[in-house]
Image (cartoon, rainbow, N blue to C red):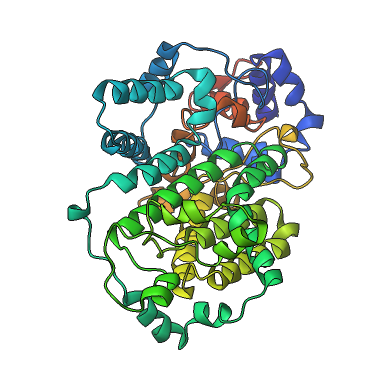
Length: 454
């Protein structure tokens, strides 16, 4: 009875709209991990759930152009070690703008100011901040052509063919491209020449509408950082692709040599247009065979789509196999390049899913149906405290382990400024009750009879 009275008194201090949500009929529909009888036993810790979304619902958009509002949010933000990504992105952006030729300091300064103003105005920040790694990658890739040749590393010609023989005993690219046909050219062109450039936008639209709020920013950040890391490896470890071995054998390669469209030249000849010949001949990174970003991007997209929509897993596997075959058939990548790109994509997805990726909820078809979101990896059959993010540590009273919420707080620390308002979800309906019950249970209370409950 005392606990029931405590809940009633707490509810009287809540806002009217929360009183209805916390009624017995509503609470009965809340998942079992939010049951009240156990939440009061750990009042000193916080559950790993997101902070409440902005007024107006999870689909509300920012309309302010005030840069000072962003500075105020930066001052109030609780910083984490993972926020180092933003200075790194800023460094990549400034360096990329600086090395672009011709040298025009005034124009470049204006470009940098305009670039960062898009990240500071709330009305544009909600779109450009989550996708900042993608824009940085595009600028980084374009400007890499202006890196001086004398400071670049040596181009490796024999490494990838040797690894191909060691790992597989044969050169799959030469095997698949030894016999060509116009039908096979079309089949390879669809995923390699069209899907690679258009599928990220299609996946983003599907994730935005049908996945849990907050999933799209994580997809955009993962895609951008994967591309940045891939281009960096290609610049530090330049390797010749299969088409170079076919044209020049194992002769040493030199910077300044033109690239090649390889099998895509047959597509240009088939349609009588210049879609790929010029772009691949003047590519900024002609010796960027390892890792294959075509395979890495496809695998990352397949992992996200499979996670959000498990029924599409077979289709995702088919597309990954399709584009991997196309890269080798068109003579653009070795099989070892596909392996390297796939491992990087999988590693990034595992980390993002473990800490930041919202979990899909059964029965939710559209993002607007989510009332709260749960972030991070979900354990199978966990105890309630473990499911809420508490992990046992040594040194508890009476020989029993006490609980720490340090791991759980990582979810909320990274959320306030990283995600846009359009992709933020509201917290669980019990979030306000947790806050009020935590403060009420930490101090003695009096029931209606005047007795004190310690």
